[in-house]
Length: 459
Image (cartoon, rainbow, N blue to C red; front, side, top):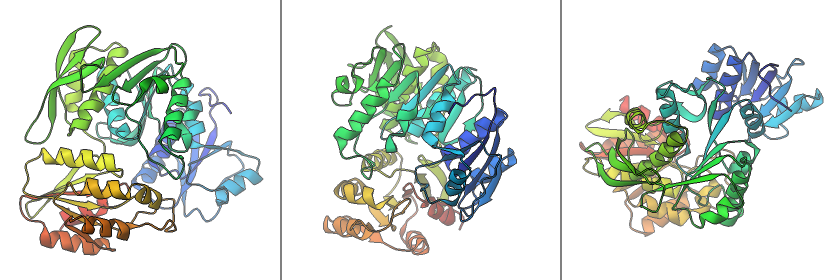
């Protein structure tokens, strides 16, 4: 299969409403491709791409693949018995994963830039995107979250830069062809697919090997044994981090009353030092911004322009996003669903002025809850009060012997002030009754717990 912009196809997306799938649909429609697809329910993403010209079918219980479809694209959650996949196979229509499609798509661009890592991909991808947009480099973007400045997960730009998130789950990123790679961090996650951390590290090493010899790797120097990840890669390696051993590092880090960091960025190769102030919160985004700065400097951008863009680059939707206020309680929503992300979000929240910190947390998948049960308990205990919701099942069923009740019992045993409700309405009722003026509330998780934030701020 080859995606050629000079030969537009009719592409059918199964699960077209997903952030990544809908962004790819938008990009190819702008290139003259015909797009159709299906999804379980109507969403903001499906409504957007329908307005852009796609045909979308809802329900996914009946096949909608027509004879004129040239290619079917599906995501990891779509099984072989999906009616659209069955219909495509019966019609001898080629079916490929989203990752394979994205990999072939990026071959049409001069400099594909892939941002990978266990955490921080969306925030860093957005920062790099904002910098390139501010520099009028006309990047094409495929994002994991909505970029506020364009109010979309996708942008059809020129043929030079293609910026995308490179997710390791199911080894998706091993289908990609980047010329610039960013590796933010490597930790245990997605243990329903990977065997252990060594298995994950091996996948990141293989990801690096996919670059050409004149490619560039930007990597966090806090990752253990970087040389193992770099392997036999012959291209340029640029490190970043929070200490002076890195090629790009930060000093003089301070936080405003609203939790936004400022720092001095040091570029070791040239000896340049320049100030940076972020519109994002948290020490973790200082590190993420250094990765973005390294990419921007590598493609030749000036430090003043980079600093200016970063000062305006706000977070993606559901990344420490202010949702409103109720009874004097500020409400933040965050996508954090891994213990490391939870710690980073709570640390960022501690830099904001508040009375007490509440976290309403919805675990994401049973396998992740089981694998990190103790780590979740420890990370969440950094908050003053925790309210737990049932596990967001996503692609799984409750058959792993571990769910929210296990997390609740462990946290209660450890002395954390924790409550657990099965129903969102009960959680809302409890929060409204117990949060006090001056408190800070974070709804947290990769599922639909954001609905609680929106519901109580609408009261």
